[in-house]
Amino acid sequence: MKLTNRAKQIDNSPMTVAERLYIPAIATGLGITIKHFFKKKATINYPEEQRPFSSIFRGLHVLKRDEQGRERCTACGLCAVACPAEAISMTAAERKPGEEKLYREEKYAAVYEINMLRCIFCGLCEEACPKAAIFLQPDKIAPAFVDREQVIFGKDRLVEKMDDRATTGIQKYTGVKS
Image (cartoon, rainbow, N blue to C red):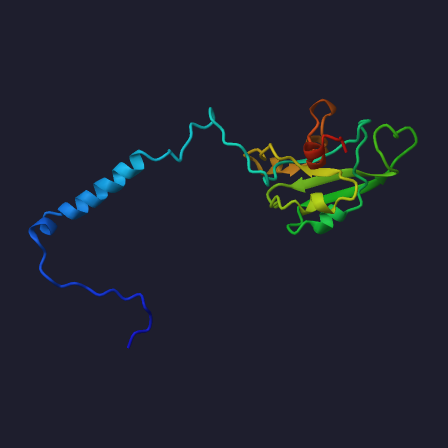
């Protein structure tokens, strides 16, 4: 009784002289080696050569600023709620008089942290943000960590610098700054 169709019929006939000398097996192996010799190499000389990122690659997070340099994040918490890994935490604060140049709305994130050990770079935080404040850069990889204290990214590492602004997906495809 056969349980599966995976059983092979075994040939018990005596081996020929060529089979005893492993000539067919050696010829088959040599053919495979020659075939791979003429194929394009799968490896590259990293870091001198770098492959382009995929169009759907999601890299390092950045908290965006508007065109006047004010932080966009209003600490609504939708990104933290949308995060399946619960990697985002924040503390909201109210803007004081005189801080209009720093924060766009009356409420802002006084503390905003992402635990990069938990983050799975799914992009749900980016999709959930109504202010387009958080953005996953398509060309930057999260750095390697040596110490566990380095994996908590605070506002000091997340808020973009005005001279090194990240290109959002909208700007990338339309040329219009968001």
